[in-house]
Image (cartoon, rainbow, N blue to C red; front, side, top):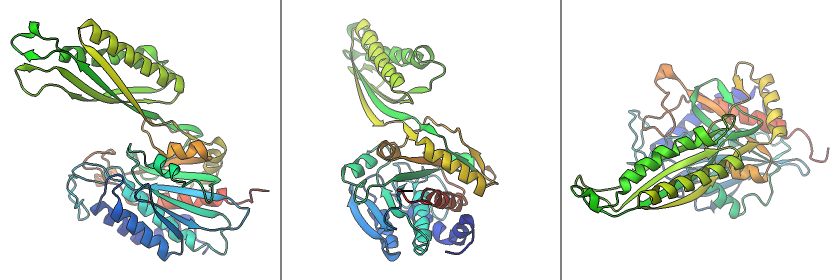
Length: 397
């Protein structure tokens, strides 16, 4: 490898990175259906000499670059899936798949991963660590990480370290966020079904109105965080769906509501679940209805390994002195990379990708989401530096 900095190397491949990202943006695919995307990854990795495994968890791909025995196996993970959102941007790389859009930046993640793959493939004479690249399907709440783990992605060889990243439109290009310890909240989804007795809207006295009960449940649940969770802890309870009734003059027999719970601490999560059950049951019973709560865990809290995160922060501050580094960053958003970090020490970090001057500052999952593509070489160089830091010594030293 030449002696240029990681950022110089990444910038030299920017045209390649951008072309990959824009091609994937034009052709987004939702979770477990990333067939074209995975084929792009397979073709690129195979051309670079990686040992390639495909079809893991439907569309997942693993690229392995063997190193020297006794040195670490470093896993780098990049998610691939898009979202069921109709894109509203007007660019020459706008989605060509109606109702599907890369509204979270996973197209950039794949481009970052393949650029890193190119750079690492050129370090055969100096690189000692074994590199295991994971291109994961279905990160958006669909269980892609769990499926890949269940199908053996953490074996043959088992990683010694795991690294992941996310472009982040909540912060500008030139910023990065990383923390030692918890950095992303654990997530649950909940479904509340309130059953009453339907009837004519002009005869409410002959019904048991689930809409009125549902309204009181939503209102009461707003007190869970403000009145039962310590102000020093973090938690979110959000109702995001309400479905009840189909016309203006009929009181329905049931209302179904859905939402999300976000928390960092197991005790906080347990308390929130208990409070939702109590509120739904008591209000529903008090109004003559029956209330049923179903909860599904999506991902645990994403917790960075303190030793790995601290090592990376020190290295990043030395090598990237123009980068604004927030080493106490946390978010209530969730990520299934948390499942990898339950089994393998490692770290996950965020790289600012918004640019207000260019109008590239819409939030994640917005139909006009787009990124400042200069985040790609910055992210590539950070990950290359992270690999270098974690592979300096033999595991026996």
